[in-house]
Length: 246
Image (cartoon, rainbow, N blue to C red; front, side):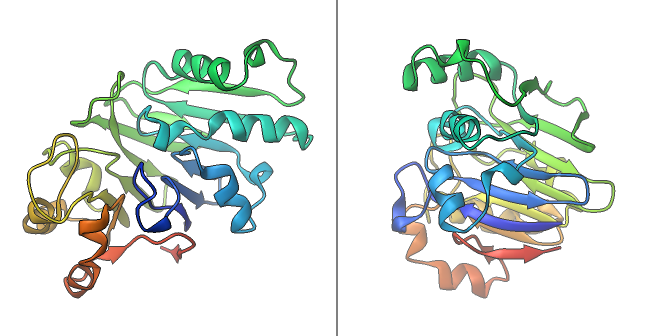
């Protein structure tokens, strides 16, 4: 697997970072994991053609994680995309995406599309095939109007795992266990937060995750100011444009 960090920021673009978006290249497909509102310009800023993307897998339905989909779809329409696009997400994804499309681009849900796109809803806890990848989700602690999930994606050789947005929950443990890379949101440096993780809470639990590599992402200014401490502890730090093979 090859990973490019398209966006590693929080909802507010702290540190000038784009909203959450990871570009995952495998032997089976090119995937986006989350597609925050700023993802289309972020992809183009990094020289990645959006028409290379075969599928998008969503952790949850907040704007900084799925709000870029209307722009991605409309870009495909006007750039004459000719290959299908699969969008996979938690239960409720289709209805929320249709609503989002109508708010941003009225009558767009009735458009005639020049390429096919489909929505696949992933039942929580049930292994699901998405473009040849085994995807397992776990519900986490983050209010989003639909199940918010952590993701585990396997191409049969390597495993990519991701916490989504969440407080600490033991539901993360089977998602992260033995993953080649586990990306974990770590919004703040200290404190117990509603719906989000802090380094103060995550750091003592790192060994429990049992992932081969752990990376933190989705950081606010209090966390961004302490990244040297995080790196000193052997944890990777997401940064826009970072590329990693595993």
